Image (cartoon, rainbow, N blue to C red):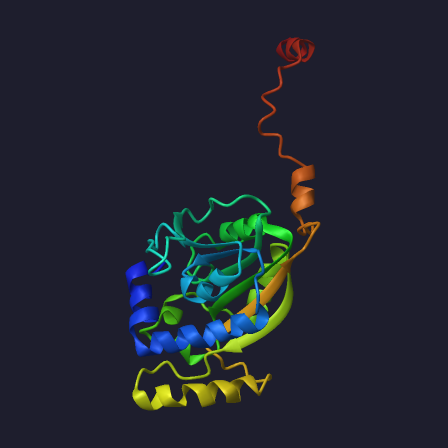
Length: 253
């Protein structure tokens, strides 16, 4: 179930904790994708807080927002680049996206498999996608008051397996949000140092979010079992075969 866009906007743009979260996650995204020279960049869910750096050099930047979440004008002070869409039908041409960012789009969806199918469809063969989800092992997924406690959390293994099933190849794993989900000034002052400490210990998986960069697997792998199901149809639509008249006469004799 999606959060309302007004709640997300209030958290990311009007609260000190949300602005800290925005900057922390965006820094990690920019380390993975420092440039988008003349590329098409699309965000899905509520990825708008992460997309602004791409406005300067990308060919096109679009923020897709699911209908059950709602949409807002973005970016502020510039022509609108946000679009309201259905989860399973994005107004994006097949194979046209170079970079795809998904935040509060996969882990909040009740049709996550269909969302991943759309992700695969719109991504061009050499494209990359970044999925950002709540970390099941973190305090962020359990403490109420942030969008990450509202979403369905994942472990790193669960997220990787899910994306592999839908034809994505994991490329880079990153964790972020090592600061606790508390808005006090004391914890805000510690946010930077805690983040640097967390990033320096790769074995520590205590970050609030998992960030996984993937590439598109082409050709798409054949799912186990699906081929057998398709090759052996049940035959329910073949109609009822007419009875053999000779056999019918012999039975009535």
